[in-house]
Length: 320
Ligand code: APR
Image (cartoon, rainbow, N blue to C red; front, side, top):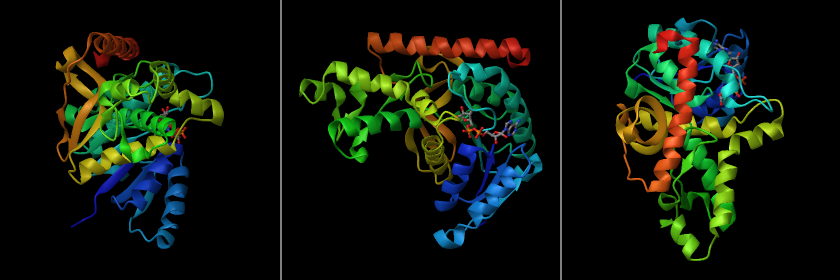
């Protein structure tokens, strides 16, 4: 059986890390693509030269021509400009929308059967535009944010409680970043909901709110430290988890920015929700009941994503 083919559109910091992880995990052969000629080729060669040491089998190639992604099973999109200090994800909108148009056309032509994972920010708007520009089925185009946001939340909770990250689960909804909605009653330590841990005296409500806020600001905290770019290790690991679930039909329950056609009362938008990812792409969207406060927070998040989509339509009317 031929190996799977993974195309990485964008070979910057996240793209290079994706290639390394996909190689180490033997997910398939890897094509790095970038407009900056030499970067994808150089990174591909460098990572390939680590394969004898690490003991993984994968062909890694670099390209600046979309023909190289032909027949890809998975495309992970990081092409665009990353956030600089003081720049919000939304500032990136105008620049990255144009990039999505080119990427969408390339995927449409050469990899129309791929499962497409978008990472480029502002995420919820970019994945929405990418689906429209590419014309791929909506269940096959998804945005990576929830796995990353919940991973950050899980880390901070594990540090707070001094327990293994493996025993902490987190449940986040809504848009990526400032309006993200973590649901404390569905986030657990060893199966015990955070709301119960508050009652048990493990953490105060106020402290939990601080941890949630740090999670929301997780990306900005790293931008502030790095000064010359944004996070890449955790975003790459998160997208690889989603690709792995698709390629191996694992049917993992993962939060993702998925196309909503009425679920949660939202239509024609991508918003972070719990999903099941398997060989059929987004195979199911899980709809949970909200409390009044959760519903308000979710609606606020949806409104902010809707604002970004409207800004996209103002720039590219064909998206309507
Ligand atoms: N087509 C292909 N590649 C492009 C294009 C384009 N039109 N425009 C830019 N690129 C490439 C750049 O040449 C660069 O190598 O995209 C790459 C982006 O890499 P980085 O700048 O290192 O950014 P990275 O940290 O990988 O983040 C990528 O993910 O999390 C988001 O906000 C982040 O939008 C950003 C994206």
